[in-house]
Length: 517
Image (cartoon, rainbow, N blue to C red):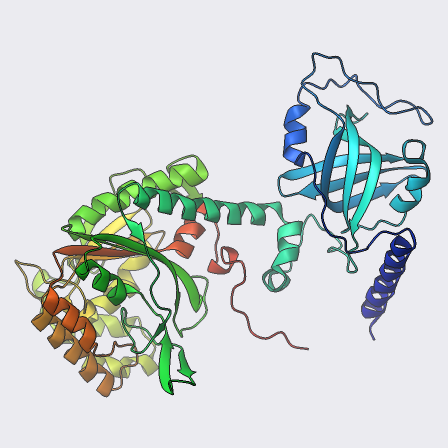
């Protein structure tokens, strides 16, 4: 055993001994139930009128004097929390505890606690305690509770990180998120922002007469998006199932059924690589509205995100890395063709239908091993590669990209004035896709042809394709009204609104390799 491992084991045994001491006093080391009268934040607010003159008396005296009646203080307070730091001076000590609302300093004195001071001496950093105390301002000007009563509540057998105020090991932070939340206040704030974002989205859509629903997470077919699925098996039915890559086709079935405004905050699963922007399990918002178009959804998206930024961060201007992002309404709108031509000055508009010419520019950005597959792609499919390689990273401020080719949009409605393109947009912010929306394809014959095209792509070796969904076609044949639909990446939006560089920073428990033993 290493020296570090030996010390850890020795400390573990010492804490077990302290737990046994608790038992001797009739205190369960892992107790049940304690009802504080206040959170720490409530105590801080209540003590705003406490003046610095109300200092502790000299050692041996009783509790601090009661503040003047005019002070907005009701004491003593009963609070509970985890010990974050402990400085002992023999017969007195200063302890910092934290609960869900904040932290506060406690002052323990043998003269105040009498025989109960022995209980204090068996406390360790990380333990949970309940205390009753009266407020005063310490000599250093810090709000402090003079502890009059102590209730040991939970013994922590393992210590907090050596520097609880700065856990820096990224791998440890993700694997032991509970330590990360204790050690790094900014991490806690990140997830509180994410929670505020999700609550806001629900309130925003509920106020516009949308209804929230739940659709299956195990699908008999690969549907709703072009992605590689996770595969599982149902034993009783003896059938293969796929974890949901998108809820789209189920939500549109509901629109057929008369739910004209519907949304789902859902977990999706895609069997793809890990990166700062990708986690195989991720959160999406999908919503659909009958009698709306993709252009209506550009307006709705601007309104939603500008209000979300203000609700979550307090401003429509948000810092993200080196950028200052403006979520105020008025986002740039540009077609995919225009964005490619703006970056590749050598191309003329008519070149966008010349597959050989586009293949040349695509190959320049790809390793030789990946260039072989370019030969099977048509001009409009190559648009997607050119856009990803030359344009996407340049879109820093919120930008709507429109005019996606049909070849890249198997579920979107064709443009009335150009059947090679679709009524679709994607929203990009800080070089990443945040939202994808389109006027839905409600023509069952057109949809059947596109499903068949997906089958041919799969037969030619393309992995990220959708299956042929006969039941969905049957639903379209019953009639899908003119409808717009949109998906927004909740994780990526949370990254932007919390200034987080990695998607793992906004997912409480991201997928990681199994830790080596």
